[in-house]
Image 1 (cartoon, rainbow, N blue to C red):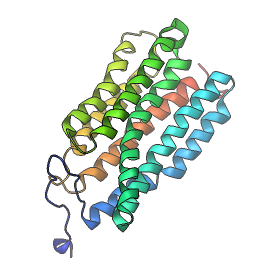
Image 2: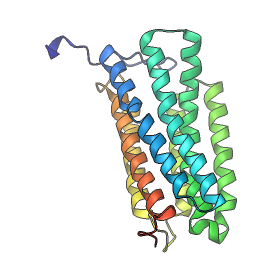
Image 3: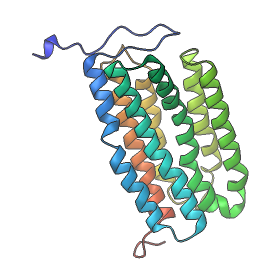
Length: 233
């Protein structure tokens, strides 16, 4: 039975988008679609734990980006699979890619607003720079959509890694281990992100890596920046 299933198509040309098989389409939809409600619940949990204005704003920014990341990804893959409006598919594809930049910036936001970096004044200097990088990345992605794909991936990785270099030297930075593990999972996932047409369901595997890394980082944010009464440091 499985021998008749088409698991992958030919890799896309350099200036074109990859066309998934039916199995890949379904896998792409499921792997992020099932995370929309859990991410909304997780975001609400952070807001419920918030005791200060800074905590609430950070929870809102980070939580919203978490939900939108999975929602926009699922919306794009659903429209793509159903063969709906090409114009709508293009808009959702661009939005899906733009959300990667937004999510990277939003993932740093709680650490820069609430962690030791905020107390040292470094957070206020870094958070606006990260959002500027996100805006530049989004602009580049909109102008050169589906062109220079390798360069686009390099931008994603640079934006994700560069700010972390200011965090690693911090001796009293709680959550550093989880951040490293999450970052490593993201980097492993990137290798699958670039393997559409070479590895069956490569994009769905990328989705799973994103989910696992996001869960790792969320756990660190909840544990160290939004501790409950009985687990407060």
